[in-house]
Length: 352
Length: 250
Image (cartoon, rainbow over all chains, first blue to last red; front, side, top):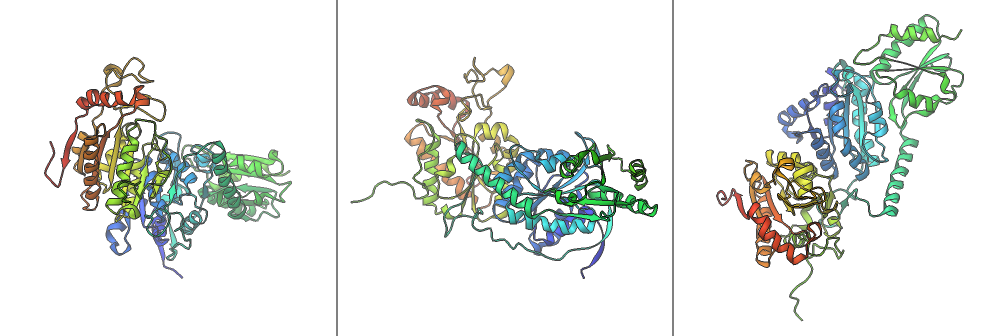
């Protein structure tokens, strides 16, 4: 058993990343993610034996290129940001995806669009899951719903990034990142992937390595793209994660991720106490989306709840047999509904 | 038979995509010679920009990465912080550095990043077809200043070597050119100094090279060398603007 501590989400993510041997952090302050760079900045000074490197970049544009640079040398590296900063990083997300750079990005969603509010929201789902940058690329997206799971997925992000040579996003929000919970911090982990056949370290004793995302004619560049698509197909086949709760006998299945899944879980319990047959599907990997979770559920009604105007609901509709069975309930602007609010929506849907 | 000249070991046998009379090829060759002479090739990571040198990774037998437009100094920061004992060399043109990437180069200088930067100033966007750059001269016609660059709408040419010399994080800043054999030799000397300073960990070392672009300037190669001499050098004077080791420049 590891140590149990009472810790804030952002700090817990930072500590878990350090324990996953991520010794390089480049960041730019932005609420509600700033405690991650702050944690790294302290650790870099206070734990000299760990050789932690922290750099505060001038913009997120620069920061996302800095993590690309360190990832190119084969070291574990990450940044943490929120919506506006993540938007600035999209050019480099596209670059890292094409160049095969295994950097990890924590995205703590706040309420947009534009400057918006610093309160909890899930309106960056499209940007994270569908690719906010240019070109045909995909990025793995994991969405924890507790600080415990945040710590575990934080560490897993680095393994996945190296396994597929692809950027990975840990997608969370203001509510989870700022909340404090009792958590058992995960242990020390290091990379199990030998990256020496492609990383940039100086070519002593080997052929030189080149990383470029510049195409060389349509045929070459289509082949390059098809290679990427082949990788994405593998990820889709192997890395789907979700949890289903009491789905088998349910008439109504709630679908929610991240902090909203906690609210939905509460609503499900209240509904069950009333005798309503309600279940919950909680996607953990948002890309690849857990389409399999919806197999064999024909005839049930689905209520998707998000802190957005309805984004993940589109993926749910693509995953079910009849999209007419899918309903949506969301709040915007940083408003978080209570389990009672969702229960009221469930009652509206209740099978007569 | 005695070999009196050969291709630098650090070069591949690829044919470059540079136009006739372009300065990039000259500077690339000087860099390759220095990687050989200074024994740097096996500890080098080259960071290439977007611009006419976008395919330069094919010309060098050294580890290399091609950055996003303007972002080379940020990418190089991530590389050098990870591998402080390697030789990291950033290569950028004027559109890449002074326009798209002004923030990245300035803040690399603010932080005093310990890598070397070669800046090719040809007063124009070469790769994209001869558009106006921040370094374009007043009156110079380009495809986006078809009647010449005007101060009233496009402001002033940017003197990077002088700006970099003002930055405390920069240890060396010199402007050179490659329009005559003597000046090519002087360019090699400047590059050698900039490269060697990286191992003394004094901060960012910077060499600006005024470089002819006959294609972009719509001039014959020999005429381009004269234009560089007569038009560019008065606006972009040659010289050492900062040398922390040998006392301040002019």
